[in-house]
Every structure is written in C-alpha cells, then in structure tokens.
Length: 193
Image 1 (cartoon, rainbow, N blue to C red):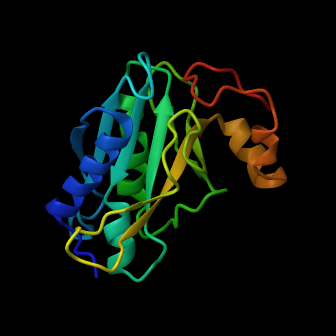
Image 2: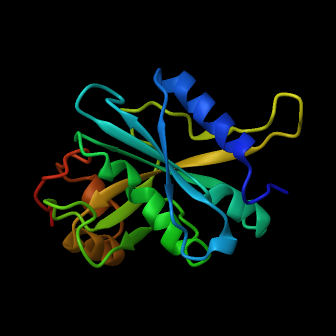
C-alpha cells in the first residue's frame, strides 16, 4: 500500500517528469480539505511544453486512492498558454477539495463556483487524456528501481471549460466540446456552446 505522505515517491514523480519535459518543477503545497487525507502538491513547470506555457501535475491523489483501495491510481495534469502559474495549481486545488468524493475519471466534468484564475471565464474542468502538446505517457511508473512490483500512476488531463460547456457535456457528452473548434490551452477563449 502507498503511504499518504511519501516524500520519496513525490521525488520520483518530479524526477521522472523532469526527465520527460527537460526542466525541474517548482513544487507547491496545496492545503487539503482534511489534513488526515495526506498532502497535495502542484508540480509547476514554467515554459513547458514551450515558452509562454505553464504545465502543472498533481501529487496527492494517487496515494490517497491506493490507501483507500480505489484503483487505478491517478494524478491530474494541466497545460495552458499563460505565464500565470495559478493555472498550474488548478488541478491540485480540485484534488485537495474533492478527494474522496470524485474518482477523477476521464470524461468527467468538475465545476467550481467562480473562475479558477482571475481574468478568465473558465470555471470548470473536463477530464481526458494528457495534453497532446505535452506528449506525456498515459501512465508513469513511480516504483523505486529496487522495489518491484510496478507503481503505475495514470496521468489524466484537466482542461478548463466554461459553465455552458460543462452543462452541454453533462447532457450531450464530451464530443460537444472535443469536436468543436476550440483551443484547450487558451485561458481567454470564448465558449463553444
């Protein structure tokens, strides 16, 4: 079983992601809803996948899921065309608030009461595969090299959407947004529905 607070496992995730994207993250703690649920972190990568973007990966969902017998273990990832690192913290804020209430499965929509980042109308998330611009694998093995068995963590992409898009996805499915002309990396984009 994965312990809730395992700094070595967090370090392995940071190391493996750094090797994939070519830079070290700024690791920022996000307060959990319940301290007993374990820590939540945002691994913030500035200028990833390219200059002018920010990418964030959570840590704190997968150990909670393992400790509570809820496979598969997941972590969330976001990529936005923005220099505002607040975007990289959005998935970690969702994990900190909803761990235990939400399975964070691809295809889900998650709503928030106000915009995630000031100046943007995006206040919900749709979950899917990792951002194509990032080229991350769908799963990362966090096992210590000396300790089989594998410790696979699925990477789930978190894409900010408008309230109207969230409602359309709930009623008509994710294709409502995915099949439209939209830029999932643009924090100022207009709603597509």
